[in-house]
Image (tube, rainbow, N blue to C red; front, side):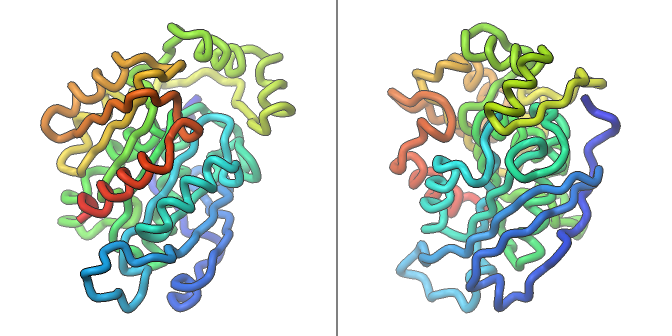
Length: 295
């Protein structure tokens, strides 16, 4: 579905001043490098995480979480709002709808050019003054945060070169596939029907508010397991439930093996798939991990 390599993103249409960014939730349409408009929401965190540390002068000096939802989700879905509310206890939060989802423009490429959407959201967090950004993705979004971290370079490399605008300082991938074209479970066979069949794309558009591109990938994008070795030394956390009905445990284990000592794997007992299955306690542990690892 690609028409060219993933690249940098343009600035958002409107950028608030720092005082507004510190106090007021914002909604903006961001523009990606390939000209797609992405609906995004910024919420300043309401709690200083480390009570023993001096309070910050401006919250925007601290960590921002950029949350990448799963296929057929969007920024306004209740499970995404719950994720954002939990992470807001640890820092600011940017949520957004991938292309083809919700109020965003374009059509979904199911994990390919979505790296441009994530880059636009990360850049917006940087424009608002955040010097640390953790990307957290679920399912399709979990594959996107891995590919984004690989394609945009490591945080250490980019900081050395003076380019930090679209780079993540820590990466969390939840319920992600390791490889493309997986059809080994009934839910994934249904996803492939949605994506590849005209009648499936009609169901996606009118039943799931998801507009799916009709073209096959060309070229096939870098797979998650191929992306993972390129992420180090940026901290990486892989989270997966042992009752995931979409991707069995060989997927997170492949990702962890590819990461080696540079990655951390949490296999969650009793957890199903993605945002709906991520309980508040797990989200708080992810928040703790991001605060500790994002530099």
